[in-house]
Amino acid sequence: MKLHTFIHDNLDEIVAEWEQFARTLLPAAQTMSNLALRDHCREILVAIVSDMQTAASADELIPAVGRAPTRLAAPETVATVHGALRHAAGFDLVQVIGEFRALRSSVFGLWHRSALTRDTTPTIAEIDRFNEAIDQALTESVVRYTSHVSASRDMFLAVLGHDLRSPLQSIAMGSLLIESPRLQDAERLEVARRVARAAKTMDGLITDVLEFTRSRLGVGIPIERSECDLRDACEEALDVVRAGNPGCEFTGELSGDLLISADCSRLRQVLSNLLNNAVQHGDRRTPIALHALGDPDAVVISIANSGKAIPLEALRVIFDPLVQIPATTTDLSKRSKTSLGLGLFIAREIVLGHGGTIDVQSSALTGTVFTIRLPRAIPDGGKARQL
Image (cartoon, rainbow, N blue to C red; front, side, top):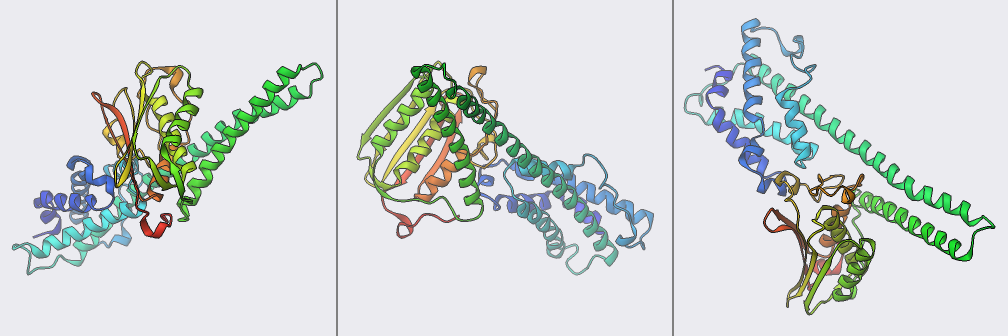
């Protein structure tokens, strides 16, 4: 039996093994549908079979090094689409390459397990053509994947520059106004407040970038534990976000023992990030609800907002850095023109640094709910989680 015929006749079993391997690559894959995990696998295999058949009919003896790539210059193939979708799903480059390695192994493993081919071996020419086709598809996927990574990085830098420019302009204008001798004391004080707010905005942006960089370098976000009253942290976060969004309604329900050994300032940062996210994506006509409950073993905090449900594919990568979730509100005044896409990522890293968990659920009926669970016991001897 020819190798390309064997692949064609066993597509379903090869695709099933591809799916099973992809499900082990990252936590988000555990909730992905079979269709999403198989993602063009059948089409890629069909294209590989077609390439092998074409090469076989053209000249059995021409080695791979003597044949020009057949699809590298094509603007859109199933392999390039696969690379783009794997980037959107949160796969990293090593995992994408691993999928093709597993695909190669699945084909040869199935060949040796099959009763029809157990005692035979594909010819060197067939193996050569198969490997060439796999490498071609891998190249196309990697090229598209890396182009999306570069585009995300460029967009991140563009957004950062844009977001820093606005407060910087406020500071520059404020410095000119303060120097004016005709400015009254009350006006000068208001200008100083505007400058302080702009500086605080810039400080927040720079802090997010630095913490993102620390996490990517494996240092982790530092956690300094002390006795923390999460009741105060919740109320302070609510007050700050409420003051910045006077048109929104907020409710807070705090119960149980909310004293915990934690980094209070970091947890306020988490709560502020989640509340601001709820403001951006929630429905202004319904209140944003914060609930905190102290159990014997843990403190559980939830932040809920109404509005359109977040799509399932967005939920899978919502905590990934540089991800910009499409706005789920039709209120144009609430849509953020730019976003670094770091707020939820940093919130997750802080919660994980406390040995806790954070997850999100979203539906049209219940709205969007972020739930944080912080254990009272200090994990790993009290040390912050290193990433």
